Length: 372
Image (cartoon, rainbow, N blue to C red; front, top):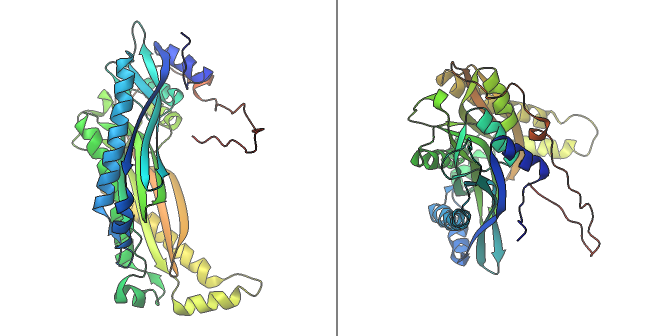
């Protein structure tokens, strides 16, 4: 029978270069009742904010169940691994389907990757990681469900009337964002990895709570040695390969959040100025201060790690209600290290070409929008 795979031509080429072959699509799902979580989450809306542990645990359990079923299906087919693993949550009238999909990878005669593995990245990313010495072990994820809690309580309401950073909120947001990272590292440690590469982060609103989930590939790189804490990186696979060739290794994914309030006086001024043309100086200085605070925290953490640089820094800003603004900075701390090497001097074009959709527009009343 014909094989059905989600792998593209470029991905199949990259697998062949590592003596691996394409396999069938592997799917794992679990439909669970989650209606009670909305009531739990709603009870946290009036507090300062923080993790809603019951929701975090329920979502993690649902994801793990679906993931294990996908892995079981691939193993039953004799696969060497699964690549391009993606996870989704789909709501059905109070019930939630946890869904994992990936493409099985079949072993060749002398495959570079040994033992069953699962990879969060595409087969192109898999090639780059393997070539850079990061042998894939398992797709890993870490999540935290939390309440925004902005303006909750009398103290919070009073503080939002003042202009500047609200350290209590900054502390809460930094804590919740780091919980997801700690949990993905814990999963990597359990499977014997010394690195988590290709980390992607997503924040969504779900059942009355916000959830932050990180996904990545737990890997083992002998050049990094045995570390009590696996290194973490959100560099793309191509970037990781390039840094490896330069003798640079990731140390840790750094995350910093600053929560600032424009304050009551500043809010009135901004409101009045919004009716006229020109710069709103209060907002300009607020955003500048928030940016400096968040990036300053990245620098301090990188110095504590004795990192050489923080690269690939991305910044995000969002209005989170009640006159508050969150500024988020994310980057990977790196350091030069002996013993790093890539297997081939140049990446093939097939490893870096972005696959393009060939189905552009549907003819049955809607437009198809491919994600991932």
